[in-house]
Length: 287
Image 1 (cartoon, one colour):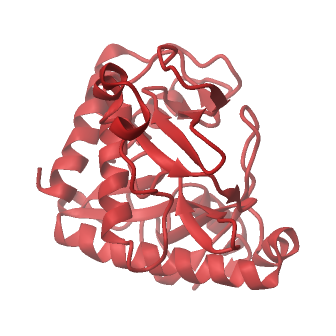
Image 2 (image 1 turned 30 degrees about the horizontal axis):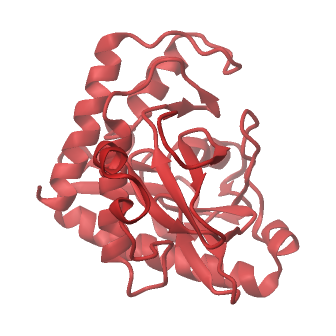
């Protein structure tokens, strides 16, 4: 995205940020895909546009729970018309916030690293679970399992709630946990009515200039969550996914050591991933 007249201030795994003024920035979702914290060489065409539309849908739907990073401006307010036209589906004007230094991960089902942890320890991130649970089983209650925010190229690490309190303070940790669980619970209920099970998800929070906790970045997309088709869900097996799990599964089976560079992902895996992203958008928004 080099053809933007604003100054680039940050390039992440998937998003690029551009300076607007002291309080606002332009957040652009690229088509890059990162898996196991490595950015793949092959982009997923149209992914940034689809993810932005899914995120925007959720930001709006969940805005009664807490404030979010929207400023009320559109890209047309901050960019020349030709640029705005190119970027309108993949860019948002966002408040500049101070990021909260933990990833807020919420789990409603036992899968992924949570399932691996449970098999070893009988708990997930130090939260004890009943014996004899099976893969993909719904948890007795929704759990908050924070992780550290890694720099680009490093791996996020799961931490206990005590460690989370040490990093961001007791009061903020309690607020982050409560809000993350509330956001997930309400979204999961809605998604289920649309045929999607949200197994787990990751929220990002920031603080505004008054110290108000604010939802930011992306929300409940197939990149930040594990989406399962409800009609194919059964306990004991990992359901087929709506998200980049396709690519992750392919990479897991490829024998790759999860260090950069990643192997080249076959075109049909990329095509399948795009159509899954699109299907998730259609189901959730009815568009």
